[in-house]
Image 1: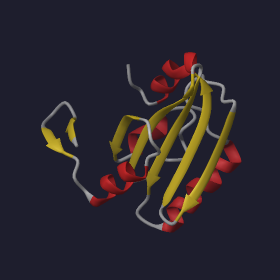
Image 2 (image 1 turned 120 degrees about the vertical axis):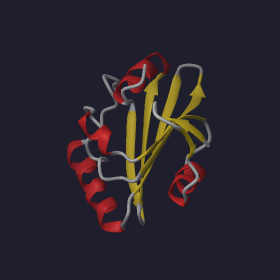
Image 3 (image 1 turned 180 degrees about the vertical axis):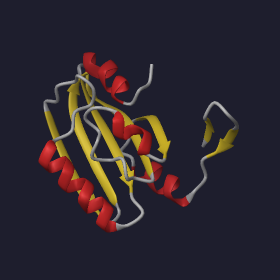
Image 4 (image 1 turned 30 degrees about the horizontal axis):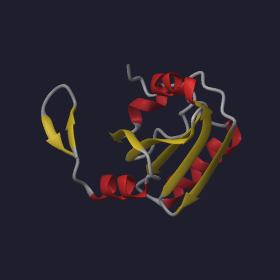
Length: 132
Protein backbone atom coordinates (compact mmCIF):
# COMPACT_ATOMS: atom_id res chain seq x y z
CA UNK A 1 0.00 0.00 0.00
CA UNK A 2 1.44 3.37 -1.01
CA UNK A 3 1.41 6.30 1.32
CA UNK A 4 2.46 9.90 1.32
CA UNK A 5 2.99 11.72 4.58
CA UNK A 6 3.97 15.06 3.12
CA UNK A 7 7.67 14.35 3.56
CA UNK A 8 8.63 11.21 1.65
CA UNK A 9 6.68 8.58 -0.26
CA UNK A 10 6.95 5.06 1.15
CA UNK A 11 5.15 1.74 1.38
CA UNK A 12 3.07 0.61 4.32
CA UNK A 13 4.21 -2.97 4.32
CA UNK A 14 4.46 -3.97 7.97
CA UNK A 15 2.78 -7.10 9.29
CA UNK A 16 0.52 -4.95 11.51
CA UNK A 17 -0.72 -2.98 8.48
CA UNK A 18 -1.38 -6.21 6.59
CA UNK A 19 -3.21 -7.66 9.59
CA UNK A 20 -5.49 -4.62 9.85
CA UNK A 21 -6.18 -4.27 6.13
CA UNK A 22 -6.88 -7.99 5.75
CA UNK A 23 -9.33 -7.89 8.67
CA UNK A 24 -11.30 -4.85 7.49
CA UNK A 25 -14.83 -5.85 6.45
CA UNK A 26 -15.71 -5.57 2.81
CA UNK A 27 -16.10 -2.03 1.56
CA UNK A 28 -14.08 0.92 0.41
CA UNK A 29 -10.94 1.40 2.50
CA UNK A 30 -11.18 5.03 3.55
CA UNK A 31 -7.88 5.31 5.44
CA UNK A 32 -5.05 3.39 7.06
CA UNK A 33 -3.12 5.11 9.83
CA UNK A 34 0.38 3.89 10.70
CA UNK A 35 0.41 5.10 14.28
CA UNK A 36 -2.68 6.47 15.99
CA UNK A 37 -1.24 8.96 18.49
CA UNK A 38 -2.19 11.96 16.34
CA UNK A 39 -5.81 10.84 16.29
CA UNK A 40 -6.20 11.09 20.08
CA UNK A 41 -6.94 14.78 19.77
CA UNK A 42 -9.92 14.08 17.51
CA UNK A 43 -13.19 14.13 19.44
CA UNK A 44 -14.89 10.77 19.66
CA UNK A 45 -11.97 8.53 18.79
CA UNK A 46 -9.93 9.20 21.91
CA UNK A 47 -10.11 5.54 22.98
CA UNK A 48 -7.69 4.50 20.27
CA UNK A 49 -4.54 6.70 20.61
CA UNK A 50 -2.34 3.81 21.75
CA UNK A 51 -2.96 1.69 18.67
CA UNK A 52 -0.08 1.01 16.33
CA UNK A 53 -2.17 0.77 13.14
CA UNK A 54 -5.79 1.57 12.34
CA UNK A 55 -7.83 0.95 9.21
CA UNK A 56 -11.21 2.42 8.34
CA UNK A 57 -13.64 1.20 5.69
CA UNK A 58 -17.10 2.26 4.60
CA UNK A 59 -19.64 -0.34 3.49
CA UNK A 60 -22.86 0.60 1.72
CA UNK A 61 -25.63 -1.45 3.36
CA UNK A 62 -28.50 -0.02 1.37
CA UNK A 63 -29.35 3.11 -0.56
CA UNK A 64 -29.14 5.42 2.48
CA UNK A 65 -27.26 3.45 5.15
CA UNK A 66 -23.51 2.96 5.59
CA UNK A 67 -21.50 0.85 8.01
CA UNK A 68 -18.25 2.44 9.16
CA UNK A 69 -15.78 -0.26 10.15
CA UNK A 70 -12.63 0.39 12.16
CA UNK A 71 -9.97 -2.19 12.97
CA UNK A 72 -7.21 -1.07 15.32
CA UNK A 73 -4.10 -3.11 16.14
CA UNK A 74 -2.25 -2.69 19.42
CA UNK A 75 1.24 -3.77 20.51
CA UNK A 76 -0.25 -6.06 23.15
CA UNK A 77 -3.58 -7.50 24.24
CA UNK A 78 -3.63 -5.40 27.44
CA UNK A 79 -3.63 -2.13 25.46
CA UNK A 80 -6.46 -3.43 23.28
CA UNK A 81 -8.41 -4.42 26.38
CA UNK A 82 -7.92 -0.93 27.88
CA UNK A 83 -9.10 0.67 24.61
CA UNK A 84 -12.16 -1.57 24.57
CA UNK A 85 -12.99 -0.55 28.14
CA UNK A 86 -12.59 3.15 27.28
CA UNK A 87 -14.83 2.81 24.22
CA UNK A 88 -17.45 0.87 26.20
CA UNK A 89 -17.41 3.48 29.00
CA UNK A 90 -17.33 6.63 26.90
CA UNK A 91 -18.77 5.44 23.61
CA UNK A 92 -17.40 6.43 20.26
CA UNK A 93 -18.49 9.33 18.12
CA UNK A 94 -17.19 9.89 14.64
CA UNK A 95 -17.43 13.62 14.16
CA UNK A 96 -20.97 14.90 14.40
CA UNK A 97 -22.54 11.74 12.98
CA UNK A 98 -25.33 10.16 14.99
CA UNK A 99 -25.15 6.38 14.71
CA UNK A 100 -28.24 4.22 14.31
CA UNK A 101 -26.32 1.42 16.00
CA UNK A 102 -22.77 0.64 17.07
CA UNK A 103 -20.71 -2.23 18.41
CA UNK A 104 -17.19 -2.64 19.77
CA UNK A 105 -15.33 -5.89 20.33
CA UNK A 106 -11.82 -7.17 20.99
CA UNK A 107 -9.97 -10.17 19.62
CA UNK A 108 -6.46 -10.46 21.03
CA UNK A 109 -4.54 -7.32 20.13
CA UNK A 110 -7.25 -6.08 17.73
CA UNK A 111 -10.26 -3.89 18.47
CA UNK A 112 -13.18 -3.65 16.03
CA UNK A 113 -15.65 -0.78 15.92
CA UNK A 114 -18.72 -0.80 13.67
CA UNK A 115 -21.17 2.05 13.39
CA UNK A 116 -24.26 2.22 11.25
CA UNK A 117 -24.98 5.74 10.00
CA UNK A 118 -27.08 7.52 7.42
CA UNK A 119 -25.29 8.03 4.09
CA UNK A 120 -25.65 11.81 4.33
CA UNK A 121 -23.48 11.75 7.50
CA UNK A 122 -20.42 10.28 5.78
CA UNK A 123 -18.78 13.71 5.60
CA UNK A 124 -18.91 13.94 9.40
CA UNK A 125 -16.99 10.67 9.62
CA UNK A 126 -14.23 12.04 7.38
CA UNK A 127 -14.10 15.12 9.63
CA UNK A 128 -13.53 12.88 12.68
CA UNK A 129 -10.28 11.70 11.14
CA UNK A 130 -9.19 15.20 10.21
CA UNK A 131 -9.55 14.55 6.49
CA UNK A 132 -11.01 16.98 3.97
